[in-house]
Image (cartoon, rainbow, N blue to C red; front, side, top):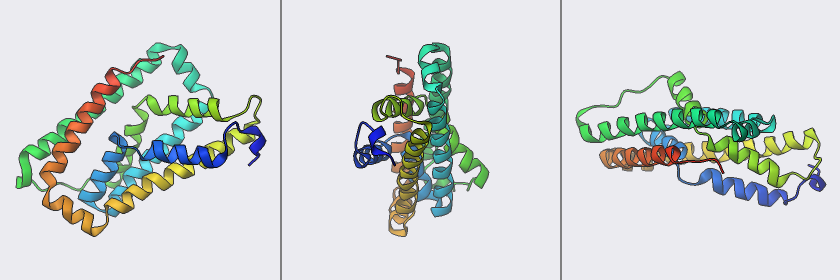
Length: 208
């Protein structure tokens, strides 16, 4: 990588991306919940869907979609309301599971639905594309070549894979899964409240 075309050291970029990508939020909570309740395979499927969604936003931002969203409020609003509605749906689903407690055995979703769930979580959230656009603007030196843009994209998406797949592997670990099994109702209640809070947060999100 040509460090002359970066305004920030590469190690600092990667560290910041790990911190941002690993912070608590609806995406990581979904990976965690799926991995604990259904196991490693389903957790990796959801996290792979999230990764594809992140890559889609990263490419879109590199091609200027984040600028289009900033200058066309209706695009931002469409994605924002779709994201809030999807998170509200997940909140209701988790709260319903918590209310039913151990009376209902969770049905294992298909691989396709798990992968799609991961993608939808990211594509219905307008914040990632704005985050990608901000990183490009802050990190890349003026006049940076396209090859440098794609090198940065590749570095960050590989870092995201490390974070998302790492969550899936960690929380599908047998001792962690046993903790979830003993306290499933409380976990589902927590996830439901977090999804609901995230839905409200997206609804109140405004372009600046």
